[in-house]
Length: 135
Image: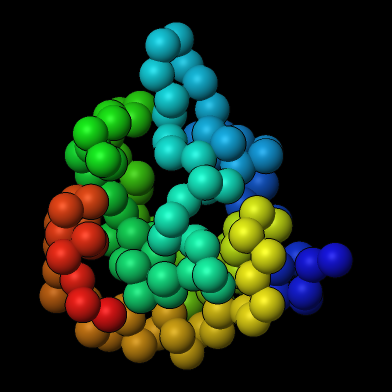
């Protein structure tokens, strides 16, 4: 059973994220490539989630290969200008509860702190940069 936060996040997910990450979180195949990585298998989402990394990806986007695998156009678009802290918290909570059994929702405050910390950044993150972060 989804929390109220996750129920709101499902609306965001189904209107935006599903086209690349899939209804089931397994990713969408196009020709011989996947459009996006499978969220249902993401190590960033395990154990109630690496919220600082996940938030960075949603706010600024991500580019390039992930563990040597290239996806779709190679870019997860940034959501910082199109989505509020609350919406980003909701969609993270939805994916986390749905595929990883998260037991606590992400808050708008969690997202807002990261947004402020990285506000001057203009480029999408690479997987290598995210792996190097000390959260």
